[in-house]
Length: 288
Image (tube, rainbow, N blue to C red; front, side, top):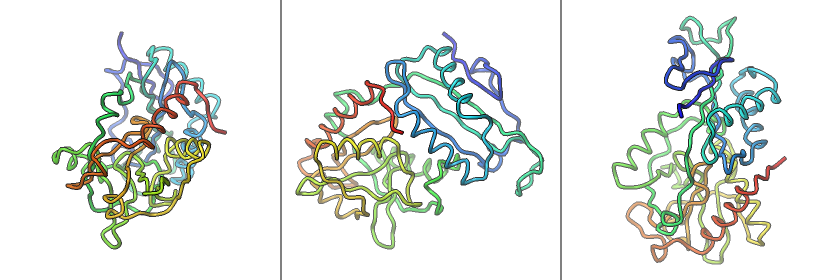
């Protein structure tokens, strides 16, 4: 079946979907995006994703293309037309097309695009093997909490990681060695006494919806969670490490740069949280 995209009020074949060459998303990265997981035909944590969408729009002074209820109807129509049971829905809004000039145009209509595709979380074999991450210098702007389409530093970091045989890159501040987050994931470690540690949700990171969900699942299971900065050296000496995101769920990390994490195998905490997150995802529960 051919994929269907949504572009500014029209459902169209994915291969035929286009936007203006003068769209400010294309020319200035003047836009935001959101990715929502689909599990068994339902959206996972839909409302928190839409809350973050609204926060990102407000941060860039972008006007919503439509009320939330209308947006949610289009999301469901995209799900229906693409017949996706397990995958992701991607949506992006830009300031629209206008003559190329940096200040906001006086008049422009926002460009709203949605796509939907099949995609699975890492399977049991992948999770039980774990992955490697590569530390890279933190070179991004100071509003990483905005889910902006300006992702070139992330692209370069993830490409560097791939070339070094790693799955993900961890942005690390050169001034103090603090790990902020991954190129498209949030970073966690587990201390010797079993406590989870992850960078607080400040402007230095994108507050992940899966990150928040995993924290709530961990606390509900009686685990201790510390939202504080941790250093690269602390991570290399940790009992466990893992990453979270919409597209990875909870993914154990077994190597950081050239250092093996603990015994080089996924730890019990990460595997337990992975299982808990899978149950939550399948149940279709939402926050808010």
